[in-house]
Length: 524
Image 1: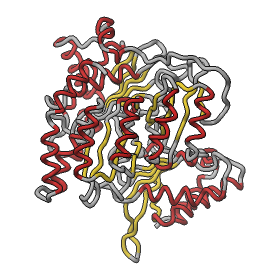
Image 2 (image 1 turned 180 degrees about the horizontal axis):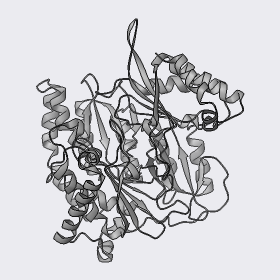
Image 3 (image 1 turned 120 degrees about the vertical axis):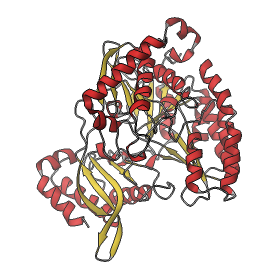
């Protein structure tokens, strides 16, 4: 843990008394749900739908869960009898169904274990993301996680000093897959083969989605903080403080135009470079361990061939992939993993934006043990499907995306379609795109449809989205399916593709008319 991180912990720890006070008022019904949400979000906590329980979002830079944090989570789950742990697409962990006493105790105990929840929600810089296999991925330009940690510490300094129009999401990508969506976040750093970063800004999903604007290339990693300062200053100078619906950086592209935004960003960048020293120096690296790339101090022996065992760039070591349905980890799994990893030197967990876990730095034998311990992992490409936490819990959700995903998985599983017949779904309960449905090959957004019998639960269907660098595109909205029809739609789609001995990607490219007819058949 860096010295800066410890300093921020001390600063924010004093804020917890106010959190306790406001939480007590909320549960005594002295303040409303909206009033509490406006306050509590800044601490990474929200009241769940109905206002009778709470959730707490753990801020984990790059989704990294150390052994100490894993032990804390295991102890907390057992101590407070926590029933739901959810992996988010922003590499955080959410603990749900907490009562007043539990959420107040947990937020304080999280701080004691180095987890700052401050700014986990609300109008603040959010959890800084990084490619989940950073530091162990074969062929990566360099390990970006140390820079994500530096960025996270730096951004914490803005929480009590700068008022943003709304949230700001920053991420670092080391991979051609770009799981963190660096090319269309508020601010994204993409590692290049020459050891520098390309920088993108003002992108985002949800209402009025935008691809990011490339504002810099060839940026030395030691200069990343200048670019973060430039983005913060640009957002505070030109962001919309009057209309929350437009208070995100992506609207700057519309309001300033791409050229105007680029000019504004470069102006703020020059001002930052002239006004303060934010360079990450070698001397600082020796004092701040976050800049030192984490390396497993062991080597592995043996060879393991398994679809969930991913060879690392470190010879003989593997990362184990674990995808629980809907991103909901069975709560007993944390203790099981903690116990199993007790003698596995250098292993750690990483949360992926795809709502899965990687366990890194495993020998072949250790990887086999962990694979056996996680038999509930996805068994096909289709079972890699994602869903936000949904309206069963979320106050703003329109549909229970978790229940919808479960119904779809259960309907398709008995058909045992060949892998690739159906793509992984991304299901969002509302337009916020928390599952990134807009860049999915097949995505769904929750809402309602009008029928002669009245409004019915439904999902808008999006197809053709892509998140791969150089191929980024938003999916096209092609219809609205009643919620109850989605499982049957997927079964019929999978049956048609399997009968043609094809794959989803190839089939819809060659059979667009049939695809659209099938959508119309099930549409409201």
